[in-house]
Length: 82
Image (cartoon, rainbow, N blue to C red):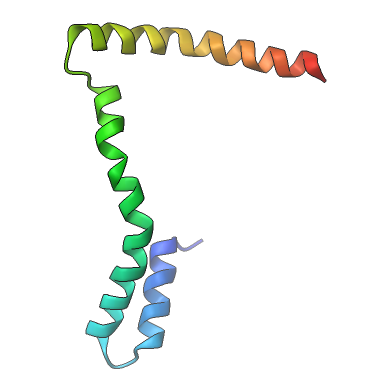
């Protein structure tokens, strides 16, 4: 299955045959709408994964240790609610 980016590029090239510069501008504009929101979230995600303080490191490590238990409890809760 082709990626969304490949599909967007193919559409742009088909819309501008013989003018690759225009096709690439169209592709960049269309693809940018998909990429920008994801890139804005990188700073938040990196701050969670690589904390700057000792307390942040302790909190991250505790959360990663508790995550499996919380996930199992949520699955159990949903299974019992059926």
